[in-house]
Structures are given as structure tokens and as C-alpha cells.
Amino acid sequence: MHFDLTVIIPTFNEEENIEKMVFAVDSVCRAHNISEEILVVDDSSSDNTITIVKRLMGGNPFLHLLIRTQNPGLSPSIYDGIKEAGSDLVQCLDCDFSHPPEKIPVFYNLLKNNGYDMVIGSRYIKGGEVINWPLLRRVLSSGAALLSRLLIPHIKDSGSGFFAINRDILKATRLSPRGFRMGFEILGKGHWTRVQEIPIIFKDREFGQSKLKGRIIYDFLIQCGSILHYNFIDRQSNNIIRAWKIFLYR
Ligand SMILES: Nc1nc2c(ncn2[C@@H]2O[C@H](COP(=O)(O)OP(=O)(O)OP(=O)(O)O)[C@@H](O)[C@H]2O)c(=O)[nH]1
Ligand SMILES: [Mg+2]
Image 1 (cartoon, rainbow, N blue to C red):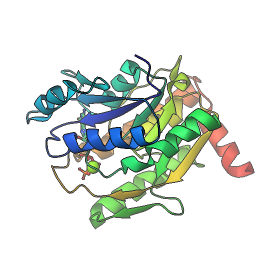
Image 2 (cartoon, protein in one colour; image 1 turned 60 degrees about the vertical axis):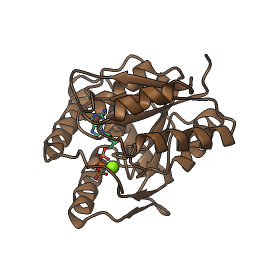
Image 3 (cartoon, rainbow, N blue to C red; image 1 turned 180 degrees about the horizontal axis):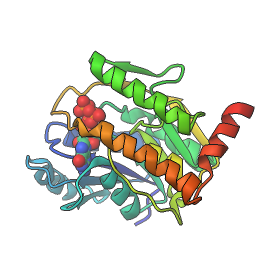
Image 4 (cartoon, rainbow, N blue to C red; image 1 turned 90 degrees about the vertical axis):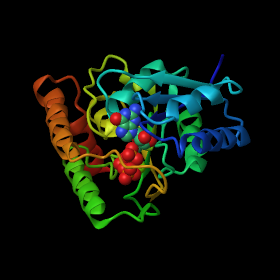
């Protein structure tokens, strides 16, 4: 079966959201004539997420499920999804409606028709916004975004989980996905040339529980170290220097 786009939805205990999200993604794609695969990547949820997806798969051949049993985590799940995807153009979005699925055609159009390697849904550029986030979440997210800009300065929201890539940029890379910031890993190590941020309005989840843990700060710091090592010790990439050149000379 041919797909124009694979939409990866990582899940862990999302029984309140998954059915609505599958239909939201499918109706947006249909309305824009995008033939999509929806790939749910689940980390062995203990609620009914898997049962619901299996039931939906009955009448919806575009819907696929990858159940993981090892190395749990958001970024490792997204990475497995990218490797399993039926299309080279891949969109990631959270299951909890923090990321508006209506924006998917904008990402797709930039990848498919404008030759971008990566498109990032950004909370921290003009027109972008975060709604209903508690103060602590805002502070942590903005702090991580600032630290990320020391490495990849021309991108304002490299930690956004709402991004799309042409997965060709990951050929011959060695990624070590950990934590919640898979987009940052790709920016630090992938073979991109053209990256575009588009504004998104990020809403806090209404249903289901947050999976964010305190460990996320530790994971992020290790990830920064890994990207620095990859660029300056292993010399597998010169993305940090390239990003600084783009930032300074554009
Ligand atoms: N496969 C997998 N998915 C996960 C994991 N942790 C979170 N997710 C999913 O990744 C997406 C983002 O997780 P969230 O818990 O919403 O994280 P967040 O948006 O930073 O925090 P909240 O919105 O406050 O919950 C959701 O679709 C989750 O179900 C995980 O360990 N494995
Ligand atoms: Mg969320």
C-alpha cells in the first residue's frame, strides 16, 4: 500500500484520547487528499489503549500499531516509529490534543512541495503560544529551549514534539534517543539542510495523565552532552557550527 505520509502517534495510557485522535488525523488528511498511514507506537499501555486501537484497525487499513516491550520512553518510541514508517515523510504528534492535528497539511506541504527536510511546530516564534500550562512547566520548557539554543541557535523550539521530517536525513546517523526531545536529537545529528519552524498553539491536555517525570531534566542534559560529543569529539556531524553560521549570517 502506498502512503504519502506516516503520522506517528506515541501512546502510553491514552484510552481517553486515542480514538478521537485517530479520527481527527484521518479526517484532516482526507480533506486535503493526503493518503496517510497512522502508526500508533505504544509502550505496552496498562489501560485500554491497545484494545481500542486493535478494534479500530478492523475497519481502517491505514491504521497500524507497534507495541513495544523494551526500552520504554517517548523518544525511543518515536525513533522506532520512524524506522517502521511506510512513508519517507513522517509526522509526529502527541495523542493528547496538545498539538492541533489541523496543522498536519501545512507540515506536509512544506516537506513534499517545498523541499524542507524538517518542519517544527513552534511554541516560541511569533504566532506560537502555550495555553493553560502551569508556571513550573513553562519555566522548565523555556529553560530547556534556551539551553538548546546554545547548540542549535537558529531554531527557537527544538524540543517540540510536533514535527515532521523527511527521514532520508537520518540515513547513516547514530542517534541515541532518550527523554522527550526527539526533534532536538534529529537537529543535533541528522543530515538536514532546510528546516522551517511554523507557529503552533499548544494546549495543555484535557484528558488522561501526564507521563512527564523529573528524570526528564537529567535525560535532557545527557542528550546535550551526546550531541556535543557527536559533533566535536566523534565529528560525525557539524550541525552545531552550521546552525551558528545560519543564525549569525542570515
Ligand atoms: N510510546 C510512548 N509514548 C509516550 C511515553 N510517554 C509519553 N508518551 C506519549 O507521548 C505524548 C506526550 O506525552 P505527555 O504525557 O502528553 O507529555 P507532555 O505533553 O510533555 O506532558 P502533559 O501534556 O502534561 O501530559 C503522549 O501522546 C503520550 O501518550 C512513553 O514512554 N512511551
Ligand atoms: Mg501532553
